[in-house]
Amino acid sequence: MIIPLEHFLIFAAVLFVIGLCGTLVRRNIVGILMSIELMLNAVNINLVAFSRSTSLDPVTGQIFAIFVVALAAAAVAVGLAIVIALYRVRKTICADEISLLKW
Amino acid sequence: MRIAVSDASFTPPRVQGRNTRKGLTTLSMMPPLEFIIKMGIYALMTVCVAGALLSVLFRNLFHAALALTGVLLGIAGIYLALHADFLAMIQVLIYVGAVMTLVIFAIMLTERFGDASLRQFNHQSWAALGGGILLLTFLVRMIQTTPWPVKNQAALASPAVTVVQLGEALLGPYVFPFEIISVILIAALIGAIVVARKDLEA
Image (cartoon, rainbow over the protein chains, first blue to last red):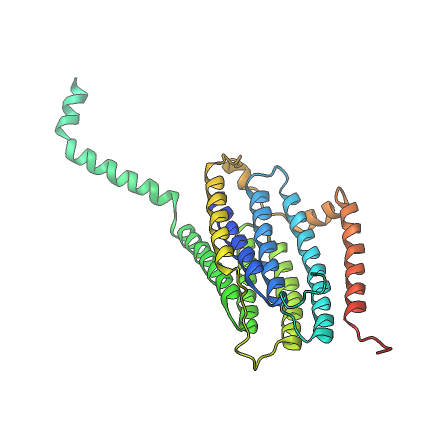
């Protein structure tokens, strides 16, 4: 491996924290979903880097990364459907304006 | 004794020779191609981090989606650098091709583009930033202090994981999660259609 494992891990950690801040800070639900995609991708980089450098069976990490990609695609499909249904009813997709379940 | 004398008499050239030999070994340890690849990967990482920051900070959500597309393409390049060819292709096909298309559709269906005065960030921005920096310092310290069991160079020289190996693993030891994933995907897609369609009565 040309680049040491730690650099990949730190890169993934930076991406994860950026995605986490975006998730916490955005008001738009689509923006929140995009930030969650960023976090999932950071986790995938970690999985692939470990499968390349430390795992005895390099296939395992990539299989798990493929599962994460599939689950992320399913999450985005359902999330965007909910966003569109919400927009049709409430005419807003700001997360802090949709407070039906708060007292 | 004689060796010592000869050493003393030839000190300047010996030192010179040792220096050039050391320089040669470091040069042979890092040929120019490898150096270029290394710098390329670091440049890719920098572009990815910058794009991620932009995708979080852009006020216009459409621009943020474009920045995120760039980040996902860069991550596909990182996968290539990690010898995960199939995963790089999957990344481009599913994320850039499908997920970002969906996201951009959702943005265009819901965004109020004319409303520039709409606040995009909520009131806990500074708290989130502080917490994020704390988490990042913790993670970086943990990564640097942990002794990762890295494989030796001979094992690392093994060829990349092929699609055949991945397929055999998916239908061998991982066949049960594979089937579960397919059920989850079909359930999620049917659920998405049911949630997003118009009510016929209304």
